[in-house]
Image 1 (cartoon, rainbow, N blue to C red):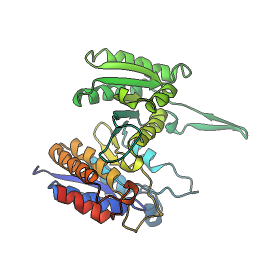
Image 2 (cartoon, one colour):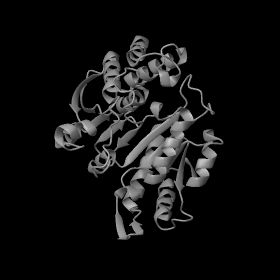
Image 3 (cartoon, rainbow, N blue to C red):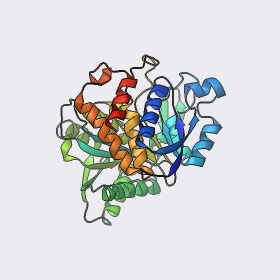
Image 4 (tube, rainbow, N blue to C red):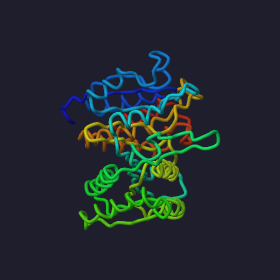
Length: 335
């Protein structure tokens, strides 16, 4: 057990957010990791209190702590603000989105051999929001790709493969159509790949990738791609292992990182005590690895897997009848 005390911003979100956040905090505490949680708001609850979906206090907290764990938030409809997730990624230059997809025990899926990682460029592409209304019937949207953005995300992907003993990095583009933008992404990949002769490489078009992912996902290892493709493909890969409710996600920059559940805030079941905290818990495992609490990260993951294998105390979405509290207590018992 580490004796370090970590200061981490905690955004407990909307809907089921506070419930699953409480679960994750209890599990991490039971594992012996000491964290000073700085609770902050973002999303609908923040808008109600501060008239802002992303208050200054929340930004200041993340700037100070450099690490945040974020539960799902609700996007209020019709008030015309930009996505909180996009704002956070751009404000802190969290250029790398890391989405591992690996089969979990006892969760039945069409494939039993999925073990891949999506590395998604997180700040450019059409998410830069550069749109112009030419006339009533025409919109001009700009796909922004820079050499710096391409080089650093590709470098990140190869470094990730190196650190995690991965054998291959594949680049995903539509360079046959987007010859300049995706062409530059592909060329940067080819140049940087030469620095890593011991890592195999692969080049694949995004439409072909999607077809092959639902035929034989086991053939893929680490995949790096521009923002839009990464957004779509990472959700597809989450579907291969059981859905967004069990998926983990990290947004990493040069000196700041935000770890988050990627599913929605599920307001229809909020307050009923039946929410599944697995997605946020697995993202917290990535966070623990990031802060070098690797032993605790492994223990929590093993305890979660044990509960899934036993199949007795599962939440409804996993085919059981357990409450969030019962699911949480069983993981703590396994610890």
